Length: 327
Image (tube, rainbow, N blue to C red; front, side, top):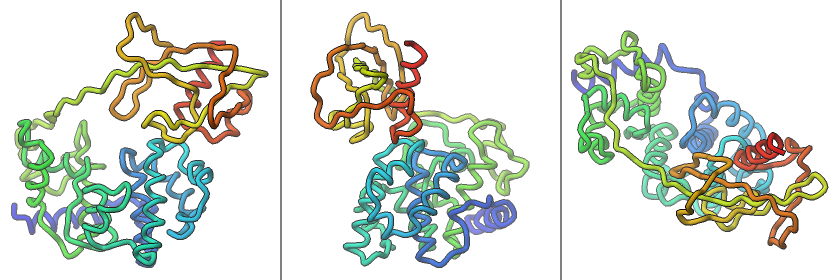
């Protein structure tokens, strides 16, 4: 199947099957650019179904780049609360400020300028160029990678390396409808070429898909090991309140409110109370209850009975809930 035929088939399928997503609404181009910027930041490491309500709330409160740039950090974090990976929203605001000051409020429409902005990597730059500006490039997200690996039956470790996938994606060709085509390929991966039990009967290009012919849809994986990390989490309680601090020490949950913590290096006989997966790290946490609170810079007392009233990361809320269950 030639690239031209693939493009035609995928677009025809998309026109009939695309989901009604809030960032795909027909709006003036400046709004579309802003919607694309916000949605792509939110979709980094987060699924579409999770993002939708957050996007709607965010856009309602901050309907323009200018309002995003000006909003106070505590309100910004509150709007993002529950999405996790808070560095994304801080980078999004930094990017908004740079666009206003350096690019006169217009999102750049070239790769070099986009890639220089905080929080924008290769994929996000390609996605913005394709979706917002109709540039002929295919952003290689997890959905498109999956379609590509199955279509070409890429199994060997060298075949599934990122550089090889970037080279091979040219099999999909290009379209004058670049914005729709990028989203069509993403959509194909999201709702047809699923990680498990792909719906090949509804796929417009299954006839020439090598994985479909072989009836083998499994993926080879580049094995990545999460780092094991160990922490003592210190709990100070007074009058039904817990002491939290602003995190300036650790790279995760930067500048957010957490319990005082100390990292240990390969401790012996470590019996954790809690464990979390965060980014590329397995966090093993031992709770230590202490009576006399030390003086910490930027410390706060939080009423344990009013947890829902506070703007806190999910990590801290989970610790709160553990403490409440294990009093």
